[in-house]
Length: 207
Image 1 (cartoon, helix red, strand yellow):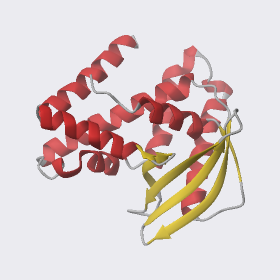
Image 2: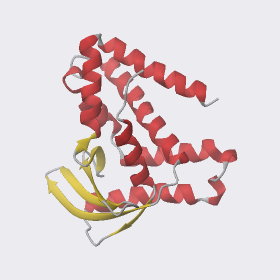
Image 3: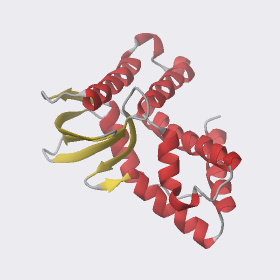
């Protein structure tokens, strides 16, 4: 099974979905990030979507909201790095699909189970052409502040997340290192097989 950066994923999900945002900083990237976070919170607070009876509808709504905020295709390409260009168009399309499923599966299951409450402050927004970094901090229950940076770009008419860093640890870099190790030790096909096996196991466990 592929080893994922569990701490980064868990922390990201907790901070992204259960946070009371404040702070005066505003701009297109920050505003759209805030909008996406608010959309997820509303889904989780919707009384018509609460409970086990509505779990499928709730998770489908969360997945839809996540796709509006994240650029999964860009994340997949950056995570595969130099190995991306060596893939055929069909292989690239397949990898984006299974990578998206990987992130959504981890993201949605954690969002649906998590009850952590944190507080986020938007500290700074920097924009260079069509790329931006929204720097935030989150006050934890221990009183410590955690640095959480969202890296975004604007390939169209919206700013979308293509990476995020917690205390300087990048999600994309973590996946890139893990994927590269598997490909070097075995093959690209072995990486795809492992991700698919992980997905199949998760689907079986959810039955």
